[in-house]
Amino acid sequence: MTPIRDEMIFVVDDDEAVRDSVRVLLEAYGMPVETYPSTEAFSNAYRPCARQCLILDQHLREMKTGLDFLASPEWAAMRLPVILITGRGDAAIKGRAADLGVSDYIDKPIDAGHLIAAIERAAGTARRPHP
Image (cartoon, rainbow, N blue to C red):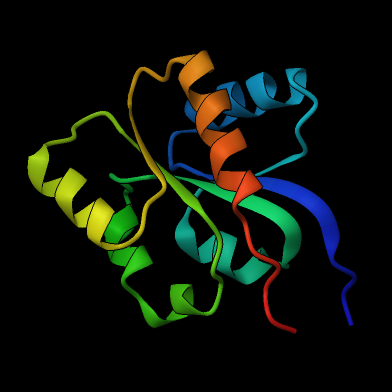
């Protein structure tokens, strides 16, 4: 059985520069971070944490968008708060994000203060996953 970590921020974005810049920012705030280039890589590596949050890009190169991933059966078992980030958002994406329970929506370029506040809100409401 894999032990449950205390806290982790997961970042899924197909753009390596975005992943790296978000990781550096969050680590500067003392937050533990794992980054992934795709939802598939994230799903394969995911292990539950007591306090956790997923920062998910909407527009991915793989077949699924971030919101398609959130509507998938593989996501349903994960149950963690999500912050959706996008460089090309619109009202339809924001509406679907709200319907899927996204805790916050951030347009790129990402404002550091907004992201940190969104993580604190989201991770503070994270529920311990069922064993």
